[in-house]
Image 1: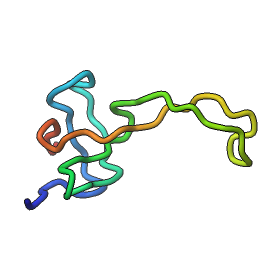
Image 2: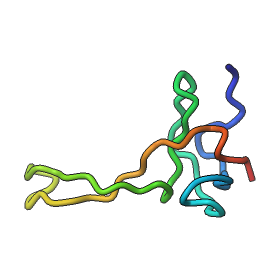
Image 3: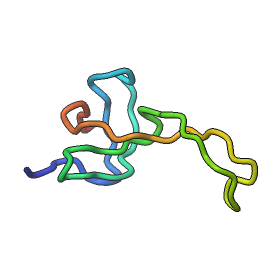
Image 4: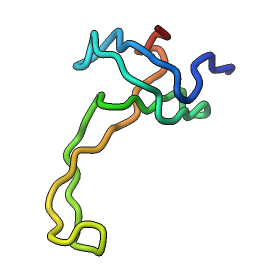
Length: 73
């Protein structure tokens, strides 16, 4: 399947919890038909202490959205 949305495009979410939000595409996964949109579909992820995250804890991370739920702006 050919994907018409590319990295760094601005898209609008047309379905789901983040409906109406706009953001920049961070990554495209054509085999899974998904895109990663900046600031949309955030999930809390537990992080173990490491050099990058000294204390560990929780971080907000963007999760992939199906291509059919976004439209190019």
